[in-house]
Image 1 (tube, rainbow, N blue to C red):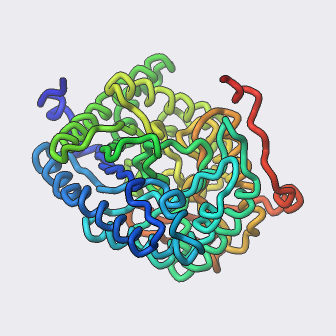
Image 2 (cartoon, rainbow, N blue to C red; image 1 turned 45 degrees about the vertical axis):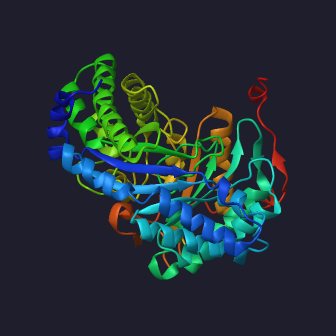
Length: 454
Protein backbone atom coordinates (compact mmCIF):
# COMPACT_ATOMS: atom_id res chain seq x y z
CA UNK A 1 0.00 0.00 0.00
CA UNK A 2 1.10 3.55 -0.71
CA UNK A 3 0.77 5.91 2.24
CA UNK A 4 0.90 9.67 2.63
CA UNK A 5 4.43 9.51 4.12
CA UNK A 6 5.74 8.40 0.76
CA UNK A 7 4.06 11.40 -0.82
CA UNK A 8 5.60 13.75 1.76
CA UNK A 9 9.03 12.26 1.06
CA UNK A 10 8.76 13.35 -2.56
CA UNK A 11 8.22 17.05 -1.79
CA UNK A 12 11.91 17.87 -1.90
CA UNK A 13 12.34 15.87 -5.10
CA UNK A 14 9.52 17.81 -6.76
CA UNK A 15 10.46 21.26 -5.52
CA UNK A 16 14.25 21.08 -5.88
CA UNK A 17 15.17 18.21 -8.19
CA UNK A 18 12.72 18.34 -11.13
CA UNK A 19 10.80 15.18 -10.26
CA UNK A 20 7.63 14.94 -12.27
CA UNK A 21 5.12 12.53 -13.72
CA UNK A 22 5.96 13.12 -17.35
CA UNK A 23 2.69 11.77 -18.67
CA UNK A 24 -0.60 10.08 -17.98
CA UNK A 25 -1.36 8.31 -21.25
CA UNK A 26 -4.82 6.91 -21.87
CA UNK A 27 -4.67 4.00 -24.30
CA UNK A 28 -7.83 3.57 -26.37
CA UNK A 29 -8.65 0.68 -28.69
CA UNK A 30 -10.23 1.76 -31.97
CA UNK A 31 -10.86 -1.76 -33.23
CA UNK A 32 -14.60 -1.32 -32.78
CA UNK A 33 -14.50 1.87 -34.91
CA UNK A 34 -13.63 0.08 -38.16
CA UNK A 35 -15.95 0.81 -41.08
CA UNK A 36 -15.61 0.47 -44.83
CA UNK A 37 -17.06 3.97 -45.26
CA UNK A 38 -14.43 6.65 -44.64
CA UNK A 39 -16.86 9.26 -43.30
CA UNK A 40 -18.35 6.76 -40.86
CA UNK A 41 -14.88 5.65 -39.80
CA UNK A 42 -13.78 9.21 -39.02
CA UNK A 43 -16.98 9.85 -37.07
CA UNK A 44 -16.56 6.64 -35.08
CA UNK A 45 -12.95 7.53 -34.22
CA UNK A 46 -13.77 11.08 -33.12
CA UNK A 47 -16.76 9.98 -31.07
CA UNK A 48 -14.95 7.21 -29.22
CA UNK A 49 -11.85 9.26 -28.37
CA UNK A 50 -13.85 12.24 -27.13
CA UNK A 51 -16.16 9.99 -25.12
CA UNK A 52 -13.51 7.87 -23.41
CA UNK A 53 -11.01 10.70 -22.84
CA UNK A 54 -13.42 13.49 -21.91
CA UNK A 55 -12.29 13.59 -18.25
CA UNK A 56 -8.59 12.74 -18.72
CA UNK A 57 -7.16 16.24 -18.47
CA UNK A 58 -9.39 17.25 -15.55
CA UNK A 59 -8.45 14.08 -13.69
CA UNK A 60 -4.75 14.80 -14.15
CA UNK A 61 -5.19 18.34 -12.87
CA UNK A 62 -7.17 17.12 -9.87
CA UNK A 63 -4.40 14.67 -8.91
CA UNK A 64 -1.81 17.45 -9.27
CA UNK A 65 -3.78 19.63 -6.84
CA UNK A 66 -4.44 16.84 -4.37
CA UNK A 67 -0.88 15.54 -4.07
CA UNK A 68 1.24 18.43 -5.35
CA UNK A 69 2.83 16.19 -7.98
CA UNK A 70 3.44 17.89 -11.35
CA UNK A 71 1.91 15.94 -14.25
CA UNK A 72 3.51 17.52 -17.29
CA UNK A 73 1.50 15.91 -20.08
CA UNK A 74 -1.84 14.23 -20.58
CA UNK A 75 -1.81 12.12 -23.73
CA UNK A 76 -3.71 9.51 -25.71
CA UNK A 77 -2.45 6.44 -27.55
CA UNK A 78 -4.60 4.55 -30.05
CA UNK A 79 -4.61 1.35 -32.06
CA UNK A 80 -2.23 1.67 -35.05
CA UNK A 81 -4.21 3.56 -37.67
CA UNK A 82 -2.88 1.45 -40.54
CA UNK A 83 -4.99 -1.38 -39.11
CA UNK A 84 -8.07 0.70 -38.36
CA UNK A 85 -8.12 2.50 -41.70
CA UNK A 86 -7.31 -0.29 -44.13
CA UNK A 87 -10.90 -1.14 -45.14
CA UNK A 88 -11.89 2.47 -45.80
CA UNK A 89 -8.64 4.10 -46.96
CA UNK A 90 -7.74 3.49 -50.59
CA UNK A 91 -5.01 6.12 -50.85
CA UNK A 92 -2.58 8.10 -48.68
CA UNK A 93 -4.96 11.05 -48.94
CA UNK A 94 -7.69 9.00 -47.26
CA UNK A 95 -5.41 8.33 -44.31
CA UNK A 96 -4.67 12.05 -44.00
CA UNK A 97 -8.37 12.62 -43.23
CA UNK A 98 -7.95 10.36 -40.21
CA UNK A 99 -4.92 12.39 -39.08
CA UNK A 100 -7.11 15.50 -39.17
CA UNK A 101 -9.78 13.70 -37.14
CA UNK A 102 -7.22 12.62 -34.54
CA UNK A 103 -5.89 16.17 -34.27
CA UNK A 104 -9.42 17.52 -33.81
CA UNK A 105 -10.21 14.92 -31.14
CA UNK A 106 -6.97 15.67 -29.26
CA UNK A 107 -7.82 19.37 -29.22
CA UNK A 108 -11.39 18.67 -28.17
CA UNK A 109 -10.32 16.80 -25.02
CA UNK A 110 -7.27 19.01 -24.40
CA UNK A 111 -4.42 16.49 -24.51
CA UNK A 112 -0.88 17.46 -25.53
CA UNK A 113 -0.35 14.67 -28.06
CA UNK A 114 -2.12 11.69 -29.57
CA UNK A 115 0.04 8.78 -30.70
CA UNK A 116 -0.79 5.85 -32.93
CA UNK A 117 -0.70 7.19 -36.47
CA UNK A 118 1.33 4.07 -36.94
CA UNK A 119 2.09 0.95 -38.94
CA UNK A 120 3.69 -2.35 -37.90
CA UNK A 121 5.65 -3.69 -40.86
CA UNK A 122 8.53 -5.74 -39.44
CA UNK A 123 7.91 -8.63 -41.85
CA UNK A 124 6.00 -7.04 -44.72
CA UNK A 125 3.62 -4.26 -45.75
CA UNK A 126 -0.03 -4.50 -46.68
CA UNK A 127 -1.52 -1.96 -49.09
CA UNK A 128 -2.95 -0.11 -46.11
CA UNK A 129 0.39 -0.07 -44.29
CA UNK A 130 2.13 1.45 -47.30
CA UNK A 131 -0.58 4.04 -47.86
CA UNK A 132 -0.34 5.16 -44.24
CA UNK A 133 3.45 5.41 -44.43
CA UNK A 134 3.22 7.44 -47.65
CA UNK A 135 0.74 9.78 -45.92
CA UNK A 136 3.00 10.55 -42.94
CA UNK A 137 4.76 13.67 -44.32
CA UNK A 138 1.47 15.37 -45.17
CA UNK A 139 -0.25 14.21 -41.98
CA UNK A 140 2.49 15.56 -39.72
CA UNK A 141 2.77 18.83 -41.61
CA UNK A 142 -0.92 19.76 -41.28
CA UNK A 143 -1.58 18.59 -37.71
CA UNK A 144 -0.33 19.91 -34.38
CA UNK A 145 -0.76 17.04 -31.93
CA UNK A 146 -0.59 13.85 -33.99
CA UNK A 147 2.48 11.61 -33.51
CA UNK A 148 3.51 8.79 -35.82
CA UNK A 149 5.59 5.64 -35.52
CA UNK A 150 6.53 2.74 -37.74
CA UNK A 151 7.95 -0.59 -36.51
CA UNK A 152 10.37 -1.96 -39.10
CA UNK A 153 11.90 -4.94 -37.37
CA UNK A 154 11.84 -7.38 -34.48
CA UNK A 155 13.93 -10.14 -32.98
CA UNK A 156 11.32 -12.68 -34.13
CA UNK A 157 10.89 -11.52 -37.72
CA UNK A 158 14.08 -9.73 -38.78
CA UNK A 159 14.27 -6.34 -40.49
CA UNK A 160 12.06 -5.25 -43.38
CA UNK A 161 14.67 -3.52 -45.53
CA UNK A 162 12.11 -2.39 -48.11
CA UNK A 163 10.43 -0.44 -45.32
CA UNK A 164 13.82 0.82 -44.08
CA UNK A 165 14.53 2.28 -47.51
CA UNK A 166 11.06 3.83 -47.71
CA UNK A 167 11.33 5.40 -44.24
CA UNK A 168 14.57 7.16 -45.19
CA UNK A 169 12.62 8.84 -47.98
CA UNK A 170 9.66 9.59 -45.66
CA UNK A 171 11.92 11.29 -43.10
CA UNK A 172 13.39 13.47 -45.86
CA UNK A 173 9.96 14.38 -47.21
CA UNK A 174 8.63 15.17 -43.74
CA UNK A 175 11.61 17.44 -43.15
CA UNK A 176 10.96 19.28 -46.40
CA UNK A 177 7.25 19.75 -45.68
CA UNK A 178 8.02 21.33 -42.29
CA UNK A 179 11.19 23.20 -43.27
CA UNK A 180 9.77 26.56 -42.18
CA UNK A 181 9.87 25.37 -38.55
CA UNK A 182 13.29 23.64 -38.60
CA UNK A 183 11.79 20.41 -39.97
CA UNK A 184 9.86 19.90 -36.72
CA UNK A 185 7.59 17.29 -38.29
CA UNK A 186 10.42 14.74 -37.93
CA UNK A 187 10.33 15.23 -34.15
CA UNK A 188 6.87 13.63 -34.21
CA UNK A 189 8.02 10.52 -36.11
CA UNK A 190 9.73 7.52 -34.47
CA UNK A 191 11.05 4.44 -36.27
CA UNK A 192 11.19 1.30 -34.10
CA UNK A 193 12.55 -2.19 -33.80
CA UNK A 194 10.74 -4.32 -31.19
CA UNK A 195 8.21 -1.57 -30.43
CA UNK A 196 6.34 -2.19 -27.14
CA UNK A 197 2.52 -2.24 -27.13
CA UNK A 198 2.20 -0.19 -23.93
CA UNK A 199 4.63 2.72 -24.31
CA UNK A 200 3.19 5.95 -22.80
CA UNK A 201 5.94 8.22 -24.20
CA UNK A 202 5.61 10.20 -27.41
CA UNK A 203 6.24 10.25 -30.22
CA UNK A 204 6.29 6.45 -30.25
CA UNK A 205 3.19 5.61 -28.24
CA UNK A 206 0.46 3.40 -29.67
CA UNK A 207 -2.16 1.11 -28.15
CA UNK A 208 -1.27 -2.47 -29.01
CA UNK A 209 -3.85 -4.90 -30.35
CA UNK A 210 -3.29 -7.19 -27.35
CA UNK A 211 -4.35 -4.42 -24.93
CA UNK A 212 -7.74 -3.90 -23.25
CA UNK A 213 -10.37 -1.52 -24.63
CA UNK A 214 -8.91 1.31 -22.55
CA UNK A 215 -6.01 1.47 -20.07
CA UNK A 216 -4.07 4.03 -18.05
CA UNK A 217 -0.28 4.05 -18.49
CA UNK A 218 1.93 6.44 -16.54
CA UNK A 219 5.43 7.61 -17.40
CA UNK A 220 7.61 8.97 -14.56
CA UNK A 221 10.83 10.91 -14.96
CA UNK A 222 13.42 12.10 -12.48
CA UNK A 223 16.98 12.56 -13.81
CA UNK A 224 17.55 15.44 -11.41
CA UNK A 225 16.56 13.27 -8.44
CA UNK A 226 18.99 10.52 -9.47
CA UNK A 227 21.83 13.00 -10.01
CA UNK A 228 21.30 14.55 -6.58
CA UNK A 229 21.24 11.13 -4.97
CA UNK A 230 24.47 9.89 -6.51
CA UNK A 231 26.32 13.04 -5.47
CA UNK A 232 26.50 11.31 -2.09
CA UNK A 233 28.46 8.44 -3.69
CA UNK A 234 31.48 10.43 -4.87
CA UNK A 235 34.63 8.36 -4.37
CA UNK A 236 32.66 5.23 -3.43
CA UNK A 237 32.73 1.95 -5.33
CA UNK A 238 30.23 0.73 -7.91
CA UNK A 239 28.38 -1.45 -5.42
CA UNK A 240 27.37 1.53 -3.30
CA UNK A 241 26.59 3.59 -6.41
CA UNK A 242 24.22 0.89 -7.67
CA UNK A 243 22.41 0.69 -4.34
CA UNK A 244 21.78 4.44 -4.34
CA UNK A 245 20.38 4.42 -7.89
CA UNK A 246 18.10 1.44 -7.15
CA UNK A 247 16.68 3.01 -4.00
CA UNK A 248 16.07 6.31 -5.77
CA UNK A 249 14.40 4.61 -8.74
CA UNK A 250 12.15 2.75 -6.28
CA UNK A 251 10.97 6.02 -4.71
CA UNK A 252 10.36 7.66 -8.09
CA UNK A 253 8.35 4.67 -9.32
CA UNK A 254 6.16 4.74 -6.21
CA UNK A 255 5.10 8.26 -7.15
CA UNK A 256 4.02 6.97 -10.56
CA UNK A 257 2.19 4.06 -8.94
CA UNK A 258 0.21 6.48 -6.78
CA UNK A 259 -0.75 8.67 -9.75
CA UNK A 260 -1.69 5.64 -11.83
CA UNK A 261 -3.93 4.23 -9.10
CA UNK A 262 -5.69 7.55 -8.55
CA UNK A 263 -6.21 8.15 -12.29
CA UNK A 264 -7.48 4.61 -12.81
CA UNK A 265 -9.97 4.96 -9.95
CA UNK A 266 -11.20 8.41 -11.03
CA UNK A 267 -11.67 7.44 -14.68
CA UNK A 268 -12.89 3.88 -13.97
CA UNK A 269 -10.33 2.60 -16.46
CA UNK A 270 -7.90 -0.25 -15.65
CA UNK A 271 -4.29 0.54 -14.75
CA UNK A 272 -1.80 -0.75 -17.31
CA UNK A 273 1.88 -0.09 -16.58
CA UNK A 274 4.33 2.32 -15.01
CA UNK A 275 7.13 3.37 -17.36
CA UNK A 276 10.06 4.57 -15.28
CA UNK A 277 12.15 6.26 -17.94
CA UNK A 278 14.67 8.90 -16.98
CA UNK A 279 13.53 11.28 -19.70
CA UNK A 280 15.43 14.58 -19.58
CA UNK A 281 14.23 18.10 -20.32
CA UNK A 282 16.15 21.24 -21.34
CA UNK A 283 15.88 22.45 -17.73
CA UNK A 284 19.19 22.79 -15.90
CA UNK A 285 19.67 19.84 -13.55
CA UNK A 286 17.29 17.53 -15.44
CA UNK A 287 19.89 15.77 -17.56
CA UNK A 288 21.00 12.18 -18.19
CA UNK A 289 24.38 13.52 -19.30
CA UNK A 290 24.90 15.15 -15.91
CA UNK A 291 24.17 11.84 -14.16
CA UNK A 292 26.83 10.09 -16.23
CA UNK A 293 29.30 12.91 -15.62
CA UNK A 294 28.60 12.73 -11.87
CA UNK A 295 29.76 9.11 -12.04
CA UNK A 296 33.21 10.36 -13.03
CA UNK A 297 33.22 11.24 -16.73
CA UNK A 298 34.66 14.61 -17.77
CA UNK A 299 32.10 14.75 -20.56
CA UNK A 300 29.48 12.39 -21.95
CA UNK A 301 31.16 10.68 -24.88
CA UNK A 302 34.43 10.08 -23.04
CA UNK A 303 35.72 6.49 -22.74
CA UNK A 304 33.59 4.75 -20.13
CA UNK A 305 30.34 6.45 -21.21
CA UNK A 306 28.67 3.28 -22.50
CA UNK A 307 29.58 1.37 -19.32
CA UNK A 308 28.20 4.17 -17.13
CA UNK A 309 24.95 4.25 -19.11
CA UNK A 310 24.62 0.45 -18.88
CA UNK A 311 24.95 0.63 -15.11
CA UNK A 312 22.38 3.43 -14.86
CA UNK A 313 19.85 1.72 -17.11
CA UNK A 314 20.07 -1.59 -15.29
CA UNK A 315 19.80 -0.15 -11.78
CA UNK A 316 16.83 2.03 -12.75
CA UNK A 317 15.00 -1.06 -14.00
CA UNK A 318 15.90 -3.08 -10.88
CA UNK A 319 14.63 -0.34 -8.58
CA UNK A 320 11.48 0.17 -10.64
CA UNK A 321 10.37 -3.46 -10.72
CA UNK A 322 10.51 -3.61 -6.92
CA UNK A 323 8.17 -0.61 -6.65
CA UNK A 324 5.40 -1.77 -8.99
CA UNK A 325 4.18 -5.14 -10.18
CA UNK A 326 3.48 -3.69 -13.61
CA UNK A 327 6.55 -1.92 -14.97
CA UNK A 328 6.53 -1.79 -18.76
CA UNK A 329 6.83 0.47 -21.77
CA UNK A 330 10.47 1.40 -22.29
CA UNK A 331 11.72 1.98 -18.71
CA UNK A 332 15.34 3.00 -18.26
CA UNK A 333 17.32 5.99 -19.50
CA UNK A 334 16.56 8.07 -22.61
CA UNK A 335 19.41 9.83 -24.38
CA UNK A 336 17.78 12.44 -26.65
CA UNK A 337 20.17 15.16 -27.72
CA UNK A 338 17.89 18.16 -28.09
CA UNK A 339 16.02 17.58 -24.82
CA UNK A 340 19.11 17.25 -22.62
CA UNK A 341 21.30 20.30 -21.95
CA UNK A 342 24.24 18.12 -20.93
CA UNK A 343 24.07 16.19 -24.21
CA UNK A 344 23.89 19.45 -26.16
CA UNK A 345 26.95 20.79 -24.35
CA UNK A 346 28.86 17.56 -25.04
CA UNK A 347 28.09 17.77 -28.77
CA UNK A 348 29.22 21.40 -28.90
CA UNK A 349 32.44 20.49 -27.03
CA UNK A 350 33.20 17.74 -29.56
CA UNK A 351 32.97 14.98 -26.93
CA UNK A 352 29.89 13.28 -28.35
CA UNK A 353 29.53 12.00 -31.91
CA UNK A 354 26.77 10.17 -33.75
CA UNK A 355 28.85 6.98 -33.69
CA UNK A 356 29.28 7.15 -29.90
CA UNK A 357 25.55 7.74 -29.50
CA UNK A 358 24.92 4.63 -31.57
CA UNK A 359 27.17 2.60 -29.26
CA UNK A 360 25.28 3.97 -26.25
CA UNK A 361 21.97 2.79 -27.73
CA UNK A 362 23.08 -0.80 -27.18
CA UNK A 363 22.50 -0.29 -23.46
CA UNK A 364 19.92 2.53 -23.14
CA UNK A 365 16.13 2.39 -23.24
CA UNK A 366 15.51 3.57 -26.78
CA UNK A 367 17.98 4.70 -29.42
CA UNK A 368 19.07 7.63 -31.57
CA UNK A 369 16.62 10.20 -30.31
CA UNK A 370 16.00 13.84 -31.31
CA UNK A 371 19.22 14.17 -33.28
CA UNK A 372 19.45 17.04 -35.74
CA UNK A 373 21.53 16.38 -38.86
CA UNK A 374 22.28 18.40 -42.02
CA UNK A 375 19.28 18.88 -44.27
CA UNK A 376 21.18 17.68 -47.34
CA UNK A 377 21.80 14.22 -45.86
CA UNK A 378 20.76 11.62 -48.46
CA UNK A 379 17.68 9.47 -47.89
CA UNK A 380 19.79 6.33 -48.30
CA UNK A 381 22.19 7.54 -45.60
CA UNK A 382 19.24 8.05 -43.24
CA UNK A 383 18.04 4.55 -44.15
CA UNK A 384 21.51 3.20 -43.36
CA UNK A 385 21.45 4.79 -39.91
CA UNK A 386 17.95 3.36 -39.37
CA UNK A 387 19.14 -0.11 -40.46
CA UNK A 388 22.07 -0.02 -38.02
CA UNK A 389 19.76 0.87 -35.14
CA UNK A 390 17.22 -1.80 -36.12
CA UNK A 391 20.04 -4.37 -36.13
CA UNK A 392 21.09 -3.38 -32.60
CA UNK A 393 17.54 -3.91 -31.37
CA UNK A 394 17.02 -7.15 -33.27
CA UNK A 395 20.23 -8.83 -32.13
CA UNK A 396 20.05 -7.61 -28.53
CA UNK A 397 16.34 -8.43 -28.12
CA UNK A 398 15.56 -4.88 -27.01
CA UNK A 399 13.59 -1.88 -28.20
CA UNK A 400 15.56 0.56 -30.31
CA UNK A 401 14.32 3.59 -32.16
CA UNK A 402 15.41 6.39 -34.46
CA UNK A 403 14.18 9.98 -34.40
CA UNK A 404 16.43 11.88 -36.80
CA UNK A 405 15.71 15.43 -37.91
CA UNK A 406 17.40 16.46 -41.18
CA UNK A 407 16.98 20.23 -40.82
CA UNK A 408 16.42 21.70 -44.27
CA UNK A 409 18.70 24.64 -45.01
CA UNK A 410 21.06 24.02 -42.08
CA UNK A 411 24.35 22.18 -41.67
CA UNK A 412 26.93 21.15 -39.05
CA UNK A 413 27.59 24.06 -36.71
CA UNK A 414 24.07 25.45 -37.01
CA UNK A 415 21.42 25.07 -34.31
CA UNK A 416 17.82 23.89 -34.76
CA UNK A 417 15.17 25.36 -32.46
CA UNK A 418 12.23 23.13 -31.56
CA UNK A 419 10.79 24.84 -28.48
CA UNK A 420 9.13 23.60 -25.30
CA UNK A 421 10.14 20.17 -24.01
CA UNK A 422 11.84 19.47 -27.35
CA UNK A 423 14.48 22.16 -26.74
CA UNK A 424 17.15 22.88 -29.31
CA UNK A 425 19.94 20.90 -30.95
CA UNK A 426 23.28 21.54 -32.63
CA UNK A 427 23.44 19.74 -35.98
CA UNK A 428 25.66 16.67 -35.82
CA UNK A 429 28.06 15.43 -38.47
CA UNK A 430 26.98 12.36 -40.44
CA UNK A 431 29.36 9.90 -42.11
CA UNK A 432 29.14 10.83 -45.79
CA UNK A 433 30.41 7.58 -47.30
CA UNK A 434 27.70 5.93 -49.37
CA UNK A 435 25.56 2.93 -48.41
CA UNK A 436 23.34 3.25 -51.51
CA UNK A 437 24.01 -0.23 -52.94
CA UNK A 438 23.35 -1.86 -49.56
CA UNK A 439 20.03 -0.07 -49.01
CA UNK A 440 18.89 -0.64 -52.60
CA UNK A 441 19.17 -4.43 -52.32
CA UNK A 442 15.66 -4.64 -50.84
CA UNK A 443 14.09 -7.66 -49.19
CA UNK A 444 14.41 -8.66 -45.55
CA UNK A 445 17.31 -9.26 -43.19
CA UNK A 446 16.44 -12.57 -41.50
CA UNK A 447 15.83 -12.89 -37.78
CA UNK A 448 18.84 -14.00 -35.73
CA UNK A 449 19.24 -17.65 -34.71
CA UNK A 450 18.31 -16.95 -31.09
CA UNK A 451 14.82 -15.82 -32.22
CA UNK A 452 13.85 -19.45 -32.83
CA UNK A 453 12.54 -20.36 -29.38
CA UNK A 454 9.17 -22.01 -30.06
